[in-house]
Amino acid sequence: MTMERIVVADAAAGPYGITVGPDGGLWFTLVHAGEAGRLAADGSVTRYGLGAPGCGPAVITPGPDGALWFTRMRDHRIGRITVDGEAGSFALPTGDCGPYGIAAGPDGALWFTELNAGRIGRITVEGEVSEYPLPVDGGYPSMITAGPDGALWFTLNQAHAIGRITVDGEVALHPLPTRGAAPVGIARGGGALWFAEIGAGRIGRITVDGEVTEHPLPDRDARPHAVAAGPDGRLWFTEWAAGRIGCLTPDGGYTGHPLPAGSAEPHGIAVTADGTVHAALETGEIVRLVA
Image (cartoon, rainbow, N blue to C red):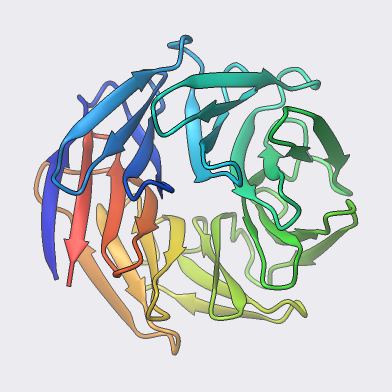
């Protein structure tokens, strides 16, 4: 694969989350600058202010309404931006809740995690919010994704578990077998859920029945962070501490792609329909991997 570096901001702005937008562009957050951005196929970049430089936009996802939705973890709001760059946000009822992961659900709403409050939230496209407490204290719910079973699946970083919540708010937890796993990223792939164990240097897979398989990485100190499934069944993930993009085949085969010199701190990752991989680097770049 070839790797291309695209500068989208200075290092102080902090590219963080990234997703494929409904318009075909790559949309990303600038966590320290309080902005969202769009990377076009030709490499051109457009940045949009959110009206709150300290809001801390983090994870971003396409919504059911054709807009992009994202968490604002520092001012505890859920943000929305249209593909034309019109931005707004919705306040959350629980103060200091720390929204982080967000995903579109099968019910036409957005579901998100609340790091600090230990809850899963739901917001309609009109801005109506519901919150669901989790049956564990200090679990630190992190990333969330829609599963193949019509439920939402999420990681519990400090409870070392994977959670499942139905659209009716019923919650089940699946403890992980590895001590100190500290899962963060999670994505649907191949009829199951894949997740990154940042604390254990492993990539895990969980079926909708709760069966867990773990794949240790060659570099156990790589600290895998975000994950995304490709159209060919491969799983892609950022290795935050190693400065590398990792790839896992369905049978557990691993390939690592080191980032160019001077690039580091990969966080969010996204794969387009043709299998092109994009990762957001907090040092101010997006890298593009093309087969």
